[in-house]
Image (cartoon, rainbow, N blue to C red; front, side, top):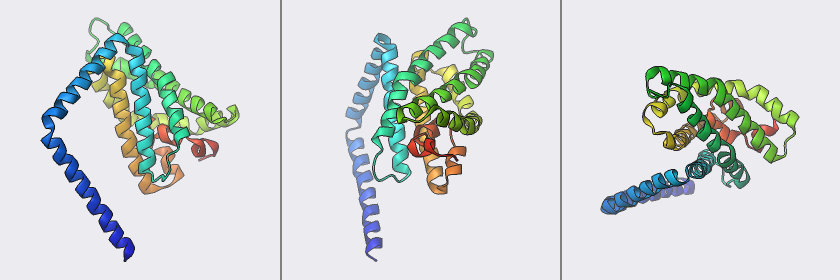
Length: 240
């Protein structure tokens, strides 16, 4: 009886909090709009002045938010800051620079006279799928595994069992996302777009995993977002 009452109070508090937040945003909508536009313009200026550093910071924040959201949705009562830190470092040191130079290479090499033509987009997506994505996933396994102090034998064993399912399932989302990325998103904003898509997919996947609650389901429902919160100590240290 007491637990039901507490649950009702929590739901009421949540609804009240959402109502107050929405009301404040509506009242301050002009100020919020001005703030958002100002922040966006500052971000674009930073991209022009320091493109690589800005993208690295963007990826760092994206991985931090993605892993934190994942842990909350999975019901973790205590934040695993070490795991989040590993992914943040990976995003800053490897993911963002990799995307930055790979997308530049694609723009220079694949139909540079008409980079948004359908044939150019198809070739870019193909190269992303067969070349960049496997390298990116391998780097994620190796980098986070080494930071955890895992042996090369354990890391390679984990990769041999999880790389292929992860890559196959990544083809569900990323080809469609990259149609938008390569067709409509300016080159300097593609790392931001990739991080936004990764975050959204991470949240969706967390909800599925939270409902199923099995290790096998955690492994077989992954893309980059799954990697962000499953290649922590418990996931890498043992088999599926």
